Image 1 (cartoon, rainbow, N blue to C red):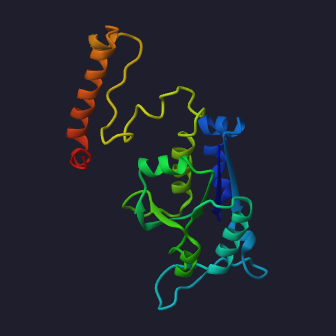
Image 2 (image 1 turned 120 degrees about the vertical axis):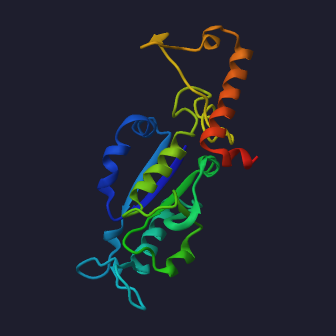
Image 3 (image 1 turned 135 degrees about the horizontal axis):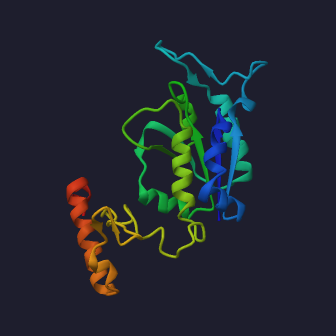
Amino acid sequence: MIRIDIITLFPDMFKGPFDMSMLWKARDRGLVTIEFWDLREYGLGPRRTVDDTPYGGGDGMVLKPEPMVAAIEAAKQVNPGAPVVALTPTGRVYDQALAREFAKLPGLILLAGHYEGFDERIMTYVDDQLSIGDYVLTGGELPAMIIADSVARLIPGVLGGENSAHDESFTTNLLEYPQYTRPVEFRGEAVPEILQSGNHASIAKWRHDKSVEKTKAVRPDKLEAD
């Protein structure tokens, strides 16, 4: 089981994705707990201010340290020992290896950035900074959803099948092999005969060869990483 706390200005954004499909089942079964902390509740003054203009000039607003640190400290009270992860384009790139590391933890605290980002002093209270890719989004809510989903599905019992989370892309440096289901033939394209043979050794070799072939064509950098 893992508890994931998400600090965000827009907790309502998570209602659809987290209330359906596998994440809903995982939460319903008590395998994953996901809680939201509305950053606005920690805002300053009557307007609950959470941001301000950047020192040195420039466009946009920067998230203030006082509200974010207060929210982090509140989350750590109920999720002690959980690493605090700031979601920002300047962080290291998130991947499946990190998802596996996080899935072994009892807890995780995710900070959804917004506007022009975090006041740098917030990073004193952060254990890691992560990006989901080399592009910029309007906020950290979508990255938080992606990380929560990728971690939750690795928790035993969430996907159902014992090997479901292991026999897929990025578990190794190879992309996943092609998959087929019924019917045997669809519009002139048939399921490869070897997959219908029942010969598990031959099927395993075919799948490995196809994974290598696909990786060479689509992500040759993954092979070079070996």
